[in-house]
Image (cartoon, rainbow over all chains, first blue to last red; front, side, top):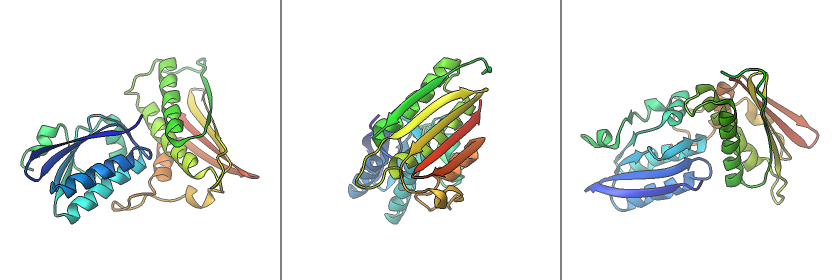
Length: 113
Length: 139
């Protein structure tokens, strides 16, 4: 299952990046490219909408950490929205839920962002 | 609940990363269907996460550069436990098997520690020129 990513600009400087499929060792480069693209367009506050992500592995998680580093070096911020049970298990297992506080919906993640 | 009377066996030869991972997830889905478990079954979900991690490692590192030998994969139910095995012909993996969880800023190195903590047993053995991996999770 190839990862597909859709991006939409919400307002000046804010974008929602929505991957669909498995965010794993095969799909991670696609997310990385999408994050680079939104930063290039000057959108440094980014919500990754995880609703369409069916499964994440450690490499997929690595691509989210990489995105966070890129975004913070552009003085922006990253939020995760709507992770499924599997994604939450992986975030908790790696204690990365302390680094990526996640929101139930994209709307919640965008509030006050 | 799974019972000892349930039988399930799946075998595949994996040659490519993306297709190989697809096959691993498909095999777990078949096990779910075969045992009447849903997507929310926590034990199988944890097994699937570990399987995908070891599978990705084997498919990425288990094939020597310049060659493309396939990886043998099997999954079966064994006395109420999911039991998966991989056989690959890559270099020995002893140095990475006991690696701990890296810190939050690291972009890699979480796969094996994650798999170890999710499974009841993660076995690794070097036998001549091949690596044998054994993953067990009680369901």
